[in-house]
Each structure stands twice: as structure tokens, then as C-alpha cells.
Image (cartoon, rainbow, N blue to C red):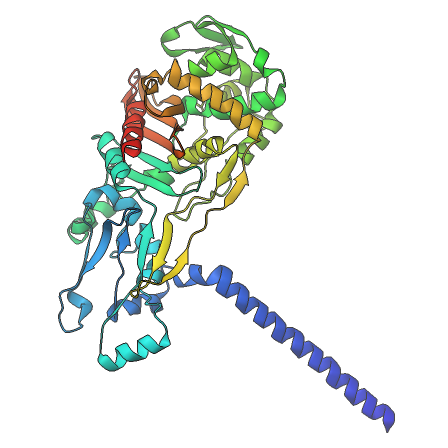
Length: 475
């Protein structure tokens, strides 16, 4: 009898332990879901429950970092019937890709912050009061990091060309500029949607700042330089005599217009963007280590971006030919990057090698003025050592002081950068690039600019970046 009781007690204890473990697991997973997963689930474009809130809640306003309205709901005051309310976009084409739209699918911040914009976050008691009073509730307002003056200047400076600008504060990760051309007017989205959806030639819906897949050209020499420094501790003793071209087995690589740079240090080769020097450097690099450096710089890996983006491609492997290696080393070949990715690399150089996690939302505020969530700047990853970043800064300073971006010299701010002209065809058409950063006192901005299909010999990306720098530091 005693044995039977002990057996029953043991079974009861085991059952209790099992159910207790299951309970603790469920509590733990629930907590994890609330902290880590809930915002992604509720903001999912397939989540219809949140969209139903639009029938009862006035969609919140999206603001710039200076409090200017980027998107808001124009209420018609039709006795709480929100069906006639319209979404207004005061800056029209300028912020179209980053702010987005709410019809024909959701894009940009309208998608990213859908839950916030349609959630009141005022508490249960306030909800009860509103229900009894039959008051229409207002969704939370989203205050972004976007800088209106810099964004407008970036958009204008791209002119009538296809291209993009991405800029951020390297010390915090706050995204200041995200603009893409060609653009569209979200105020007329219903009228132009069919044309946009079928626009395969201009791809106006494409956010080129994050989704563009561009040949980098000479801006990739930042990566090649870093790898050379890692493989050669005496890199400061580098010397190369440029005759205007470098000859390899069966093919030459020429500098721009075949111009000779003569005797060069590594800093000079970087400043003048010498193809001969860098193809020679690339030919001697360890491909496996080159791959590792590219991966550390976020090639062929996830980027810390909340917007939709395309991964950058680094094509080299142990089977790569000499032609592929030398082409890749100067930014040609099959390498592809986005402006956002290159701006992240520039930001890390400006921040002693550390990349801050980029973010667009500064804080969210409910209708009572209570901040429901706020972004705290934090380090995402270390892309390089402090010493490596310091050395790359010197080379990028030379580019802006006497090299291919010397238009940046003599300003009230100090500029650092790398230019690029990625060859597209045999008719001298290129993608024009500038990647770098500038600082004035404690104020900094890191940037990447690309303009598509330009004639070689022009430097529109440098001019565009300079205008954005001018605007930002004047503000």
C-alpha cells in the first residue's frame, strides 16, 4: 500500500514538474515575443487586424527631425466617418521613397511604423472615455531623424538624373537623408499607380538608396586598401611608379585617359584613384583574406537596415582569374553595392571603426504627448580597428585636399572621401560616385551619392555631396 502511494506521489510530482516547465517555457516565450517579435508581427503587411484600426483611428503624423510634417491625415470632420479622410504629403516627390504610401500596399515609413500610426497607446481608461463619448481616437505620431534641408538639397542636386543619396550621423546612426530618383508624387498615387506598377524603364517605385545594385567603381578601393593594410604591416612604405597603365597576362588596365601618375605612395595612389597601382595591389592579395575583409564590411550579408534593401555582392573566390581579381580590386567586374551600404562603411571610418546601428525613428508620441518608445543609439558592429580607420581617414582626407575631390578643400568643414566612376559600356558612360563624410566641430555627416549613366570625365556625385554638406552645416 505504501509503495502504491509513493508511486502515485512520484507520478504526480513528475507531472507537476513537466507542466511547470511547460508553463515557464510559455511565460518565457511570451515575454520574448513581446520584446523581440511583436512589433514585426503587428507591422507585417499581411496583418489585417491593424488595418482595421484605420476605420476607427485617425492615422498619426510623420515628422522630420525639426518637427516638420512629412505625412499627415487631413480629417474632413464627417461625423467620425474616416472614409473621406486623405493622407497628405507636403513634400511630394522629395520624401516619396522613405516616407512611402498607404494605398496599393504600404511602403517606407508608412509600412515600417504602421502599428504606431494606427495605435493610440493612451491606456484602457482613456479608451473607455472615448468609446462612451463617441470620440474618434488619434494614432501615435512618429518623429523621424530625417533632415528636411539636407533631403531637399540632395533631391535637387541629383537634377534630372537617375540616382540616390543616403546620409547618416556616424556618431548616433540617425539617418538624415534617403532620397531616390526618378521619384513619384504620393499625392497622386491613385491616378498614376497603373503606370508606376508597369514602369520597367525608370523603376520609379524602386528605392535606389537601399535597393540599388550598382557597380562601385573606385569607391571600392576603400576595401582594397584596407585589405592591403591588413596583409602588409609596412604599408606606409608602399611605392609605385605609374606610367598610365598596368600590364597583366593578356590584358592591360589603364588609369583614366591613360594619364600617368608617376611615383606614388599609397596615399597618393588613393587620392588620385590610380587604377594601375590598385590592380597591381589586388593581384597580390590573399583571396581568402580578401573575402573575410569584405564579409566584415557587410558584403554578402545582412545590413542593419529596417527598410527593404539588396545585399551587396563580393564575387571573388579561389577559382577567380587574374582578370576578375584585378577588375574587382578597382571596383569593376561583378561587385555590386547600394548607396546605403557604402554610407555605412564611411560612417564606421568616421566613428573609429565602429558602426552605429542606423535608425529612422527617433521617438513615437501618443496624442497626450507621452513618448511610447524612443530609439537609443547603440553600436551595431566593429568593421575595422581604430588604427585602420585612422589611416583610411588620412587617405580620404588626401582625396578631398588635393585628389579627385579637391573641390571639397577650403571649406568651413573638413571633408573626407573617395570618388568613383564605374564603367558601364564602351561609350564612356559611367556611374558617378562619392562616398565619405564631413565634420565641423562635433557635427558630422556620412554620405554616399550615386548618379547613373553619366559621361566619364564629369564629377556630379562630388558636386552633389558638397551641396548636401554645405546645406547640412549651414543649418
